Structures are given as C-alpha cells and as structure tokens.
Amino acid sequence: MVSLRSLLALTTVLALTSASALPSDSAAEIFHASLLARQEPGTPLYACHLACGTAVTLSRGTSPCTDVPFLIKYTDCLACAHPSRFNIWQYYGTTLTAAGSSCGLSTSPIPAVS
Image (cartoon, rainbow, N blue to C red; front, side):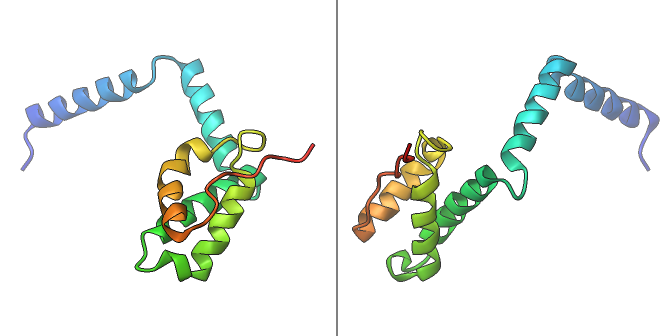
C-alpha cells in the first residue's frame, strides 16, 4: 500500500514539474499554437511533413532505392520542403540526403515558382 508521505511527495514533484515546464501562460499558448499550426491535418504544411517523415521512415527499409512508396514520398518531400515553400528540409534533409545520394537521386528540394 502507498503511504501518505509517498503520495504527498509524488504530488509535490508533479506539481513542480508541470509548473516549471513552460515559463508562462503566454509562452505555453504560443508553443501550443505553433504546434497546432504545424500539425493541422489537411493543410499543405501537414502534408509536407507527412511526406518527408514517411520518406525518412521508408528510407530505413531494406531496399529504399527500388521501393515505390519511398520514391513517391521522397519526390513529394523535395517538391514541398524548400525554404521558398515550407522550409522544412532543415528537419529531414540530413537523413533524406544520405538516402537520396545512395540511390543516385537528386538531393535538392525544388524552389517554388513565382
């Protein structure tokens, strides 16, 4: 059985941890809003993260160079990840550049046409 002292200690630790995780309500709101904006399903940015993230996952397969789903997601990622579009190559580029290079693929995201 859990002692009252242990329960009190746990409650105190949890309260202090959650109170110090984010410095203020406004910081928490800004963080939450940016997280929701990035992860809003159905948005082009979400689709780009999905394509790039899926390409990373599929790049770890046994033969990504001949894996059609990998090649499709990789191409989709290159088409949306450039700084002039969603600027997310910075998150996926290291892994996908290695995978693309080993397959002889282009490793440069495609700039937006203006």
